[in-house]
Amino acid sequence: MDLINFWLENLPTMIDGLIVSLQVTGAALVVGIPLGLLLALGVQAKTKAVRFSSMAFVEIGRGAPALIMLQFAYFGLPQAGISLSSFAAAAVALAWTTSAYTSEIIRAGLEAVPHGQQEAAVAVGFTRIDALRFIIVPQGLRVAAPALLGFSILMLQATSLCFAIALPELLSQAYMIGTNTFQYLPILLFAGLLYASICVPATIAVSLLERSLSKHSA
Amino acid sequence: MDQLQHQNRVTFPGLDSDQGSVRGQVERKSSMANQTVKPKIVERDEIVRVSNLGKSFGTHKVLEGINLTVRSGEVLAIIGPSGSGKSTLLRCLNQLEPQTEGIITLAGITLDAAKPASKKQLNDLRRAAGMVFQSFNLFPHLTVLQNVSLPQQRVLGRTKADADTRSRALLERVGLANKADHYPVRCSGGQQQRIAIARALALDPKIMLFDEPTSALDPELGLEVLAVMKELAEAGMTMIVVTHEMHFAETVSNRVMIMADGRVLEEGPSASVMRDPQTERAKRFLQAVRNR
Image 1: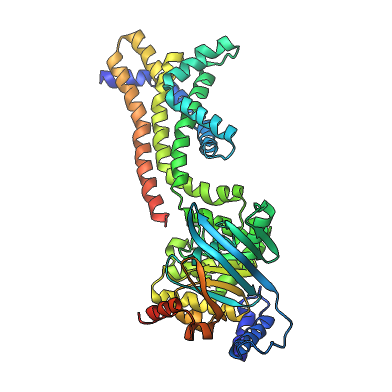
Image 2 (image 1 turned 60 degrees about the vertical axis):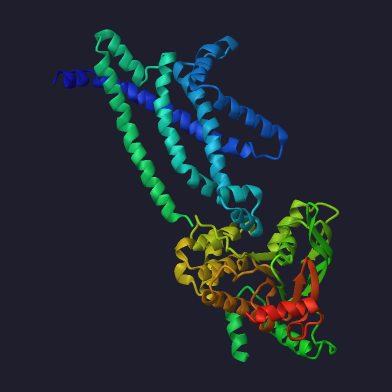
C-alpha cells in the first residue's frame, strides 16, 4: 500500500516527465522519418554530390552512439556559437539518429517494391517524381511501416539518454525523486512501468498493423 | 460482321472504330490475295519502323539486325521459342530497354541508338505506346478505378472527374465495372490483365504492345483476355503482340513474325507464315508448338 501511495504522490511529476519524453520522441520522429525518406532516396541518387553527402550523413548518424550525438548537440555546439535548449538539443540529436536509421529501413522497403511496378509506372508515362510519389514510395513505406514503428518504440526508450543533458524527461524526474527520497527502487520501477505502458500497447499495435498490411498486399 | 462493327463502335469509344474495321477487312482481303492487289483505301500510316535494331547486354547479343514495319490498324504477332528476344524487342519499342544499335521510329518519334533519347521524346513515346505486361503489374495499393484513372490525371492532365468517367466506361467495356472499387489483389489473373489493358487504353495510345499477356494465366482465364484483345483488334487498334497463343497469331493478327536467337526468321501475312513457313527452324518451331 505504501508503494502505491508513494507512486500516486509522485504521479504528477512522473507524468510531466513522460510528456517531455513523448514530446522529444515526437519531435525526433516528425523531423527524422521524412528526413530518413529523403536520405533513402539520396543514397540512391545519380548525382554524386547528393549521394555522397547523404551517405556521410547516414553513416555519422548510425556510427555515433545516440548519447554522443546528444552531448555533442548540447555541450559541443555552444562552442561553435550555437546554443540550444536541452529540449532542442535532444530533438536535433535524436532526429539525426532517427533519420540515419530510418533511411536504411525505408531504403530496404523501397527496394522490396517489385521491379515491375517501376516498369509499369514508366510505361504509363509517369515522370520519375510521379513514379516515386504515387507508386514506389507508398508501397515501400507500407513494407517499412512495422519496422519504422518498432524503431519509434526504441526511440521513446532512447529518450532516457536525455537524462545526460538535463532534460526533465521521465528518467530524470525519477532520478530526481530518488535523490530526494532515497526511494530509488520503487521510483525506478515506476518509471519502467510508465515506459512499458506506452511500449507494450505500441508493440501490440505494430503486430496488428503487420497482419493487416500483409492481408492487403499482392 | 455488321453486328460486330456496330458492337465495336460502342466497345471502344476512344477509337476510330469505323475506319478501323474497314482497314481490318481490307487487310484480310489483301493478305489473301498475297498482297499483289493494292487495297483501294489510302495508304495507311506507318506507326512503327525499326531498322537494323540490335541489343546487347554487355557482350551478350540478344537482338541483331531486326527490321520491322507496322502500319496503322495492323496486328502483328511475334512468336518464337523462349529466349529468342521477342520480349526484348517489344521492350525496346517503348525504351524500357534502350537498343544498342539501330533506329526505332514510333508514332513519329525517332530514337537512334547513337544518341541518347531526350526526356520529351521518351514521354511522347510512352504516351503513344500502351504496354501490357505478362505479370499485369497493376498498382496493388490503388483501387482498380485509381489504377486506370491516376495515369490519365498525371500524364494527360485530365481532371479526376473526367478520368473517372472514362475509366468506368473502359472497365465496363472489359466487363469489370463491378470491380472498380476493389483492390487488384481481389481480382483473378484474367481480370487483372483486363484491368491492365484498360489502364493502357485510357491513355489513348496509338499502338498497344502486349508482352505475353496470357502466359501467366491458366488457359480459361487467358481466353477472356484474348477475347478483349480480339475486340480491340477488330476495333482497329494497332497492336504488337508477343505471344505463345498460336490460335491468336493465326486468326486475329494480320501478320506474324517468327523469331529465334535474336533474329527474325520469317515475317509476313499470318496465314501464309503459319501454314507455310519457309525456313527449317520456323517449321520445327511451329511443329513443336502444334504437337503440344
